[in-house]
Length: 358
Image 1 (cartoon, rainbow, N blue to C red):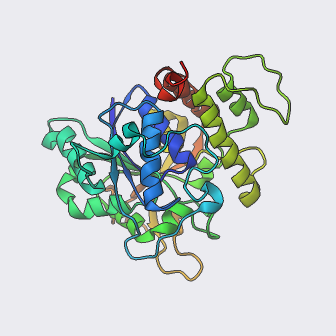
Image 2 (image 1 turned 60 degrees about the vertical axis):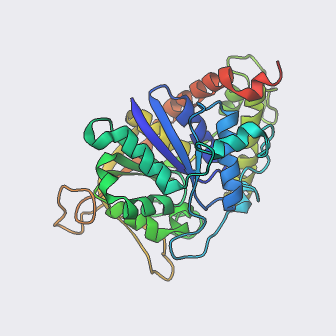
Image 3 (image 1 turned 135 degrees about the horizontal axis):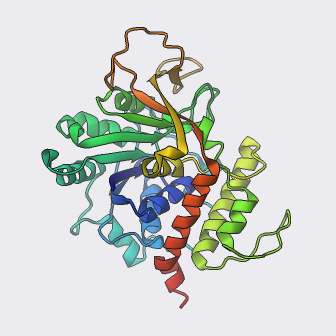
């Protein structure tokens, strides 16, 4: 059993990460915090609450609003990929003002901010060593995580690992060598990498292999059906939830085709963080020294992975003097999509999107 906290900026692929975090049986989702990134902070907060409700999360899982801007840089968003509201083109999600959605933003009647929510979850779960550690997962800029590390250093012993989607080994997506999440707040990412806690990086090199092909989308819409598959048609959705998820995939696919030239479908970047925590054997990983370029004229935000052991004096610690990051290098793609589709089936049984039509 793994206890997890998810820090995110929903976002189409963040939404799939939320679904997995709720419906993988061996994971216990303690809460969600939101951070600037794919869209404005207000939209991100609402999107997280809408997803928790739509995917049938336990009632105690709440949204904790976090940083609205990076530590020192100007905020940036990505409407070209995710639409202005962060979940462009997604049909069937409930409105943010639905009482059951709005309730997800409150803890005992009030909003609790991200770093306090993270700290409370770790403190109450870990109990100074009497209980299990918590894995903290990041699928957006790591501003909240950096603030938590800085404000609550005494709770780092209660963190099993930081797992983040971000970076790339020799590649970027929003700069020649920088990935969006890291580029948004590179200083925060360096703070996380310098913490004395195991850190796991799921980079673009791996996430770009997790493509939602038309075949996967067929199975998402009509599991086990004999629908005749042709290049340009999709079957009708067997449930409202599956329709919602398919519209998410279709919008994301169109954005990735137009912006990055992805012809076979969109990559589900963020969901891989949850898959790693649940089934690390789906991934091949190697431990390296990783640092963030903070001031390069053309390389700010680059994740610099020392694959040749340029420095010879690394020690065995996690943090500033050691090989501080376990870097994912490959993925069992079929195994990942099997896990995802199993979670969609579980979600089908409890999603209020389906119950509303009964």
